[in-house]
Length: 520
Image 1 (cartoon, helix red, strand yellow):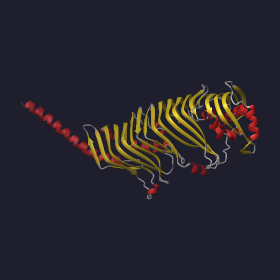
Image 2 (image 1 turned 120 degrees about the horizontal axis):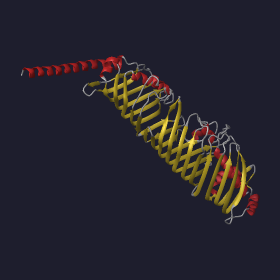
Image 3 (image 1 turned 90 degrees about the vertical axis):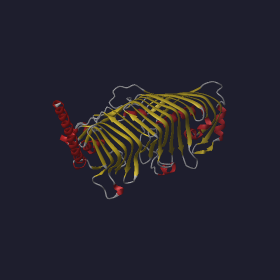
Image 4 (image 1 turned 90 degrees about the horizontal axis):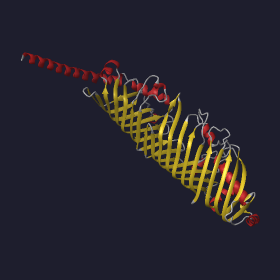
């Protein structure tokens, strides 16, 4: 019996000792953690909380009603700078006791941040001024307080505000974020992304971003992880009405409006190598895009040279590769307006489907295959239109080839566009117009063939395009057959490019030239 009493006494003593140690550690940690969070806080922010609970058994720390605000505050509420945040609760899981004892730093497996509302006030309109400052100003100071391998954020809200104008730059609602496998070292802190990770996942059910003074980006749902991006109900809307936009212009400029049901980017690889951004994707799929491009001709022409698309890609200053771009079931509208009282001329491409392959920037490339673009759509009302277009990004002469065919086209639909270019209008049907254009940065050569019926031409006077030239119109219609009678009328044309005009102006000049040769 004495032996059992001794064993019981030893076990009881150990239990009491453990309880005393637990109580002592709890007491010490409750005194030490506030010192780490406040007195030894080297960040530019004050961190306060209402309740702090430490569980040594599970090695968890829970803080509730947390607030973060700058240590240095402006007296003017309109000139706030930095982060202001309220957080319902923060839970640190599996913390290491001895790191707190010996290093005055919390090291743990993970941190869970619940229902944070974060406001970042800036004195510029850039969401991020300098990516490297994230490492020196934010990540490094906070990792002096806490280091974790995994971060989870639930039901958050983030708003970045330009304090001078009291305008939202970025607004994310119902934000959920998880980052796993976080590694931070002094060398990594110097990178543009100041930490490494194994994977991440982010979703938000509402996003707003002020792209510039002229445009706003909105989406209803954003899903992002290490390999893919999905954006639903995407919208790019202008800040100003057409009249307001044009009134602010010194030179011609397009106004864009974009809407898409869903955008998916698959098999993403991105990051920084030697401080240089790179981006690769297996595919970008855009469904039900509605794109409107509006140009008003009242402002003066922009006389800067307009590079072709091959040069635009060649001159991108970082590695970019998109294996396939697919646009499906979409609508593309181009509007050109000479004056507000007459209304714009409209070119419309319905049921628009585009597949582009091998899209790459020229950065670092010595050899590359051709970019190939296939388009299948309905032009204007219901005219089937197919186009194949290819070019090589590394070709400094910017050679390209286009093969196209448009069928069953009512030529009266092109009235607003044919008249300025060939000083003529037509009525009738193009049964089939085929063309092949081989061009470069300087000129192009085109072969074309046309079948048509019920065609009538109206010519206008030189120097007075508002007046019909009845005599020449009558002569042209005498010479021109009303129907091609199933025969193919062929022609060729050579066009000099106007370098101050866009690629699509160049394309339209080619089409206008062959129509002029055939019809006039």
